[in-house]
Length: 373
Image 1 (cartoon, rainbow, N blue to C red):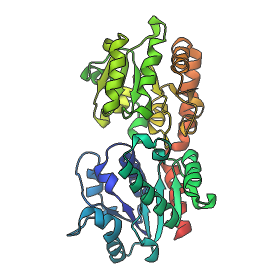
Image 2 (image 1 turned 180 degrees about the vertical axis):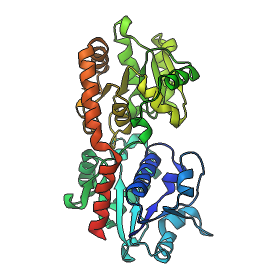
Image 3 (image 1 turned 90 degrees about the vertical axis):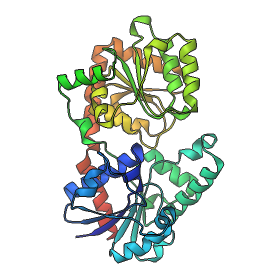
Image 4 (image 1 turned 135 degrees about the horizontal axis):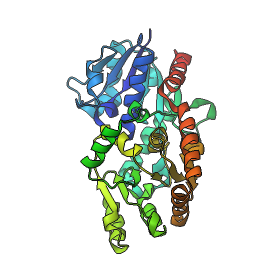
């Protein structure tokens, strides 16, 4: 039996990408390797539908600071707690590890999701970039092993931080099991009615920020033949960039064709499963988990031909140049007008997605832990 500690701040407090990564990994470790002791270290905890399991399952032991400020405890004070708990290994699940942990004798792993702030510095405040540079580089230099969630992220770690290739292991991420389960017709119909959605629609899931390229999608819609100009359903957090998108929507006369909704996470799989095409022409991603969610939902995908997205999509997508709305439109038109091509993408994409299931990926992670232990 191993005693393994995890930075669980994102698990308990983040309900998008980094939090989902933490929860799916820890859930699968508990399912497939139940004999180990898993310690979850978090400066604060939110108890909700996504986190409650980790607060009640005997597989996990929660640790929070008793009196130290949360930020200091996470970056420094947690080392004492790890020693008391006799942890043999500590995994920083989101880019950082405690300062000086390499002096404690506890083995360390850090997951690096992306270094996008290096590619798009103008989208990040200068203080944030300075903090990321220090924390991310420190973790990469001092952790015993680095997990990159894609080959694209691995290349960035080597390029920007000068880390040797042999220190980095690519272990892809999975998505929640609910995206792998077909929903009933009754459920599909009820959820479509719940959000008052049209019968057929294009679908986008992701933050509404410039890097994700929602504006490119909307511009592509104006280039489609009228009979293929399906409504677009957008799921994503709002930002200043959204005003730019909405201004274009208004100018282009598309107001009645764009639906901005905020569904619950458990409803999301049903929305994927009813989409005609999933659109994700992002300029850069650490991995691109929404693409994987779409592949499991048997929805054809239009995504980008750059960054990590060809890795995530495999043969299940039309790969477009995200800088060219006409190329995005070409992919949408081909999928909507060619049923044989559509079915080929769905079948190839679903087969490609099988390599990202939880069990083989968590086995790779446990193999990495065992190398260090």
